[in-house]
Length: 267
Image (cartoon, rainbow, N blue to C red; front, side, top):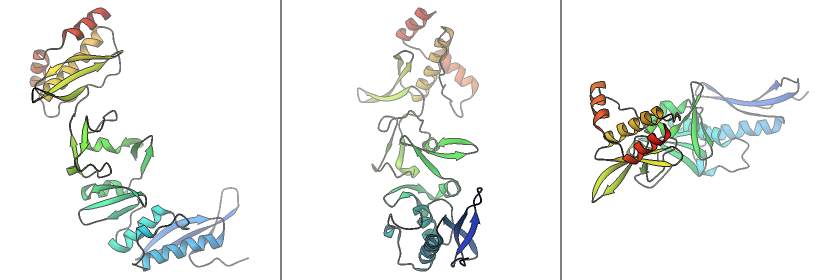
């Protein structure tokens, strides 16, 4: 029987077959690097990991697709080497922000304040959306900025410097915070147009303030439910507003005649 090569350890699968795990210890931390069915390939994984930790001339941009070591682990090791912190997520730290890598050319930029959150969570991609697993739930990472799943870039939010991968808080401007509310320009002034979707979009009204518009949307939901249209609408939540102030605004805000006519026809 061949003796395992340096950094390689034998292990067995559930079916009893043998495979080889590569790992190393650096700065008193034991790091698992990956596994392979071939001992020599597992040793190549170990050698690559060792080189990344000891040769500071190797950079992230030196990664090649034929590397025996997965790119995510490549990032973890180089960050550990350069910054003295090991994360299981593919993160590389800079003084005021950090990169979260998907490939050598694909990455997000996050504020340093988000380091604790993403250092223990992996970002997954599906249909152009990015999620993390959080307490058994899949959370869209854009929700951390108050951006809803249906939000449209340019209408509901924008990236100030034009870089969609720069997710630092200072680079994200929220234009529309509430369901059904869109900021519009009317005679040089910002107004807030409210629409609610029934079979098609029904205009609720145009309002001077965003808060009035958000409350009007909630009122429209209630009117439609009273008329028997029980769709799964999500009402707007006014953070910090007292119940008395909300009630007064709810009763004073007006909705369009077109919405009222729609409700009357449905009763």
